[in-house]
Length: 266
Ligand SMILES: Nc1ncnc2c1ncn2[C@@H]1O[C@H](COP(=O)(O)OP(=O)(O)O)[C@@H](O)[C@H]1O
Ligand SMILES: [Mg+2]
Image (cartoon, rainbow, N blue to C red; front, top):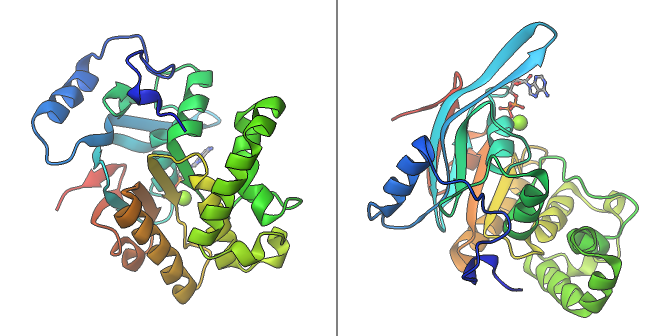
């Protein structure tokens, strides 16, 4: 699969606007000779939700750098804004203030179609409740992103390559023997492994995982953490995982704490 960033032409999801303010500060930080390049980052992220006349402030100025190949855990109590932050980093939602950058390009202010393209190509997502489509088999669920991202003709032209990749991923997560099963015939851990395989179909650079073990018992959660750790080490996949569980967070390379709308230092 071709890498959009390898071309000399700006990829379609790159904003034509020049970096200003906080984004320029990030460019500067990236250029300052960090050991590993900053892959995904944010500065001054703010987000509130509206409930009638009331504004509920959730994120109140988040600064975060995720380096290429890093496995970062964001830990904090339920309701502190972890999912909100992950959605902003993954361009599933837009901040009220602040910037998000990916490989030095601002991404939070892109038009919706460019954000969709960016997510399809470069971000894989995994959620607590798997979000598998119940009528599809495991294999079909893993293939679903290709079906959604491409036209029917485009999909059929590349069908065998997609299927090869899907089978490889099912092997990788140890689920090839469940390829023809429907989600209701899978255990929680198997459903999460199917969701991880699906997230990797497009060979994303970053995996965003929202409480990936939150619905699993400890030993099944450990298996999922083992798979994520191997993907990080062997494939150099950048992983940003949010969790309320300090033990799960401890499996990552680095942990940051989110509380009262901010990243707590130390
Ligand atoms: N769409 C929404 N509308 C209103 N409030 C929301 C919405 N989504 C989340 N919230 C509130 O924002 C806060 C943070 O939510 P969330 O990011 O889901 O926290 P976490 O993932 O850490 O449990 C919570 O108080 C939650 O009730
Ligand atoms: Mg959450």
